[in-house]
Image (tube, rainbow, N blue to C red):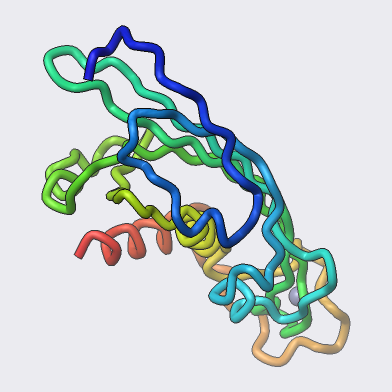
Length: 191
Ligand SMILES: [Zn+2]
């Protein structure tokens, strides 16, 4: 691809079904924003302890090509997510609200082999294998799941009184407990 050519910008549809087939191999860049209700994301819906009408996530996506010395330009996809859902607090077993406000960046790859060869130490972006009919909805859903806390809990002192059954489960967890599911799932995805 000629890196000096001007690529067309395509506006992504906010329709959930349209997000299931995005041509990420075409020489064009995308941007778009929308809202996905929890019912559009069945795996997220399975995690939610309570589903209220209007629960879901605002998303914003943009892709662009970034020059890379000595090779083809890389295609980058940036995703932002904002929203909330209810999970079961592991201390008092009542609903607790979890607010997510996440941003992530992917470098798009055309094959699993290419993605496997990508340095895992790169913390700024991770490889994502795309196809001509790429399911962006699934990627958004994956990212919501990866962003959920491993052990959801009310903030200290905000648990439902008299509901503690198992005591303070998980209080010895390290501060970076949210890192762990991310890495575990990332490795699972690659294998
Ligand atoms: Zn609680």
